[in-house]
Image 1 (cartoon, rainbow, N blue to C red):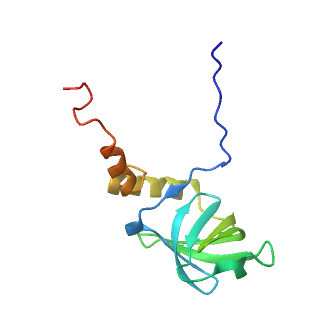
Image 2 (cartoon, rainbow, N blue to C red; image 1 turned 120 degrees about the vertical axis):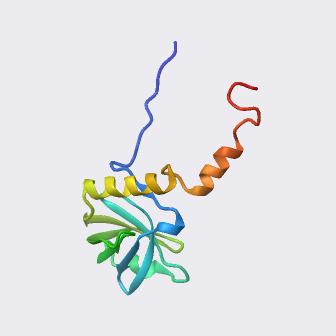
Length: 137
């Protein structure tokens, strides 16, 4: 008997992954940092050369800040530190981005890159295609 299994998705919201060249900036805590990905209810950013461990205490630490996008729009955000790993911080937002803003960012990425994957992932996917083409010719 062939049973179909449904994949479980632990996330309620779609995350936008940003290529390095167009990553938004987040102004939070004591500086400006680069956003790696975001959704309506979360943002992950990197603090290069900084140990963000102090952000994890007291748990959950609440941070407020602003995200600056490529089109110069600024959005206020507020959330608690969900996770700190290496040099990245993940915020669970209580005040975040609207669905409309996420869709606008998705359209921006699609227009600029033609897809929602990192450019290196597109190159890897192209390298994995057969050399003869789709029909083996």
